Length: 81
Length: 172
Image (cartoon, rainbow over all chains, first blue to last red; front, side, top):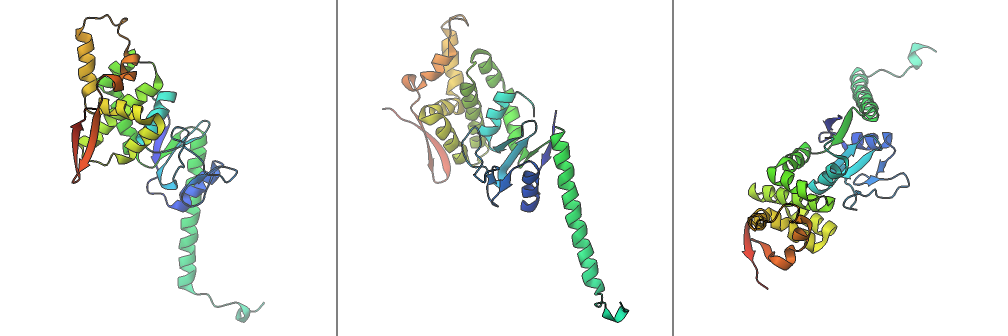
């Protein structure tokens, strides 16, 4: 089981570097996909803020870190957290 | 090249640059290391671990476990968990407007009513009434029960007044 690393204290630059390393980007506020479009949370269809990300390995799942998205993730993938 | 052609060395600036470079390099190596560990599935990242912990706890509540035994619809299970989460946020006097909006955007008004139904504790009472009727578990189909909440009795409005959360039952 993967271990949680809190990115709460990461600077914006570090978060952008993290996203860049995973093939994503940011305009400084929101997460961007490879084509430069705002990347949307798959459960809420809302843009994901740089300061509220949840990132899970495997096929790299990036979500907005809110109760609805996290519970939907757990409902789909099981108790993997 | 003679030494006189070299620019004078500012020891303070030089030391400061060294520190800055060191911080940047440390940060870069930290992120690269994290990415490698992430790609190896050792780590996942989250801004706020509290939200994950609350989600895990609510899913383990007796109500949620019992509900899931009889309801296989994933959306209904998520709505149920959101109702429990709304209840927790309300009890702790935390803001739940944002979650309220997300539930409505995702599941429409009816989904929000279902979540209120759970939040207010009415679902457990309603389930108790159904169970008292003596039907077998096979006969008692929970999913239509939850779907028909609007038809049966959920006319619950949550009204915020003077920053105090108050509930008001509304009859149409």
